Length: 226
Length: 226
DNA sequence: AGTCTTATTTGATTTCGATCAATGAACGCG
DNA sequence: CGCGTTCATTGATCGAAATCAAATAAGACT
Image (cartoon, rainbow over all chains, first blue to last red; front, side, top):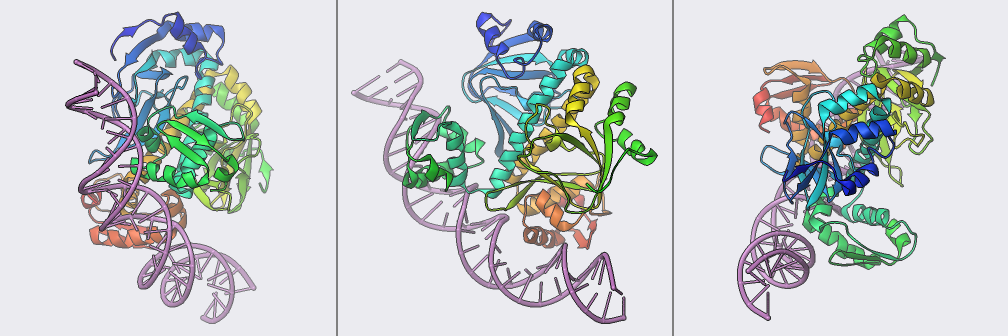
């Protein structure tokens, strides 16, 4: 972590709207603000490693954090990608155990950190915080289940199509920018970068055009039927 | 659900030792006992379906519950398998939303059900319950991440080997019984039953012997090196 | 602009596991 | 005990994606 600092006005603002704090009562918000530290991370910096004793809770203010697990020979498998406003679910270790995965900044990122012991203390006194944690975790569990099922049920082009559809809320032709590099997206979807590339080129035949990070979707319905 | 009933002495005992209630203070336990209903499920009975408004929290007392997601053409992907003492994480929907997956009894099972609205009420007043939920969810998230990574990093025989090792705590030759049918295990590991079968026969060359549900592990170290 | 580095695409090959098909084993039940 | 149904194994084939290798494109930084 480059510089550690108390949250300034900007950061407080962002924190207030983050998933974790947005549903809390004023007192819990104050208690959490009290123990928040803000850090600026360069790309590739690790937040924590799989197996380390867990001491900090993390929340993303800006940028993206990739969470992955390693196998014995060093290959990595991404299990989640957290963006602005997200509580890093993998850092919620309330029982004094260890982190179950490794977290790494995927871009220059602004992160809020909270001492886990103190979070535990506050949550033990203030049900709204404990509930907010439970709610965030519920959402993340649902997403993890969705990824798991997606991996097992859909081909690479289908997974990519579903991702694109999830990005464009409207049900008609749209353009938008991918929020991060394709290699990150590939990891998130459980694909090798080559497979993502091939999926994109196969989707070209179904109204999808990609130039750099710019994606144009010609026919969402066609995508849905891939 | 076949018969709904108040928990008897046996069920209360089991509930007390379950993951959800074991860490609670006496008052929270009492509050939860108050709203608990016990049900006996025949195999294949559904507890809830993906997409239904969530109204009940479930915990397994005995038997096994399979949680899966469906794709449009009806194929199923298992995302979790819950056994005795487990809180069914997929049924923790505290925000009035919908179930994100389907739950089905995989054997004759005894289940405890709790009205979600009331659970929310109690947890809103009693931090220990909210914390217990958060803790259970943390564990399940970690398991989901592990499955996700396992799927992406390991071959079928490796996944099976890891499962077997996780079952036999001791680090020397052991025998034990699989707790459920092989087809269930296959689903849990994200494999077709045929692939599990082939994995077992390949592991025979590494000191693993399987007869029915009986597994003998000759050399755990060899397994670990698969 | 030019260079260096990192990302992405494309091609060729190979491996893994799903699927289809058929046989064999186990288990519950009358 | 024998029958039937469900479960497990084995074989053959197929398809999807990982991997390896190389070429191209895109950015970052002088």
